[in-house]
Image (cartoon, rainbow over all chains, first blue to last red; front, side, top):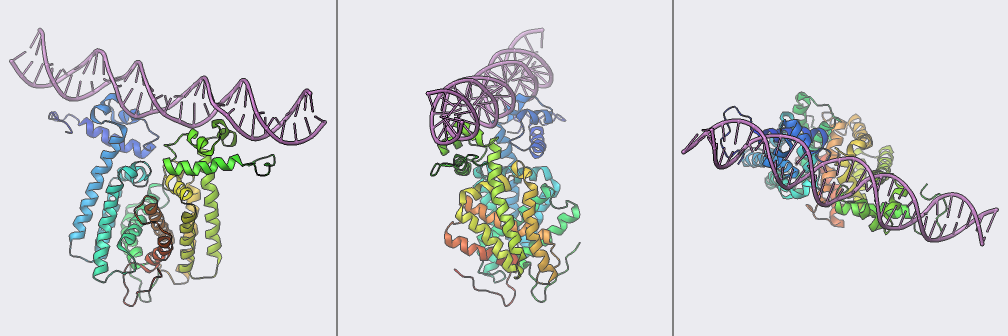
Length: 213
Length: 213
DNA sequence: CACTCGCCTGACTGACCAGTCAATCTGCAA
DNA sequence: TTGCAGATTGACTGGTCAGTCAGGCGAGTG
């Protein structure tokens, strides 16, 4: 589908170029504040070609989101299946999301700003998919509640919201330069967010685990 | 300014009517997906009158946001000034925000969806004001870190992000029907979010505080 | 060479809508 | 009664931009 006829060896995949250009342009100008011609220009491609590969401007964003989000859902499911403590699972989920941002900041910015946190437009369209992520995290918490390592007083749905919300807020802070954005900070944040949510902010008598970094 | 000439007794304040109509329309259709004429119609007012009271569609949203946000900033400052434990302060902050949603769900929806979580459009414009809220919360955490009740390993900025992010995620879940939305749930959530962030999700040996509700 | 087919082009169209403005209304004061 | 000023009206304008379409190009095929 990406290119029905075999792409000539070495010939650029225009469809991919358009998607990559869209990431750049959406991240820079925002989905609503850019024109389709901006994407075409960025891709070095004629305006009309965008409509050869995609039905609409929105379809480009949908494709970017769905492609990436499914990878995350699969990762969460895979992590949940392991036989390790819940805290370690949550650490791996946080790692996955933060690494995604570290590796593809523009794409993650687009997904968070234009979809995940834009619940009134695209978020609504993808609410079910977004919810799957919460449910995946809730599943991790649920097992921990059952084996006694997590409190029963906090429902797994609620815990998942807090955990995901905390991570997304930190990502948003990076995206908009409210927190310093370095490789070290990314690495450090993985442990901190898990420590904050699982261990809590309060000192509990004998509780001051050294954090690397 | 709202009405330079004294408003006739019992005569409706058209400016206020437009603001209220905007809350309804923005909440229902979203800021970008509604027309100024929708707001005028909802207010039962001629199209042109909107531009008599406001310079632009955006100014209406700005006014709604700034008015409400300042109240919250003042509330946070007032809470921070009290001589009570940090956990209690955070509980009061959570209470304030959740009560705001409970009392004015449409207005809070508009502020969260169109401003706070719309960092690419209005969020950017108000980034400084939004940041003030994080800083207010960070201030509360900072004192607690200094008096030894909160861990030093988690910076106050980071903790503030987690706390605020968790609350906003829960509000968003209510807004989009991902969590049940009842007066009881609102009340319950105040304690849960503070318990999750301050106390953590994990059981800590002797730690299973009964939660009301 | 001529034909085909899919890739590619970019000028154009149609719809939408924020913001303008000239005209009208209304209450009050001289 | 006349005049003023601010409130109110809604048709209209100007600009923007997503999506269309008729046609050009080039590689493979016979």
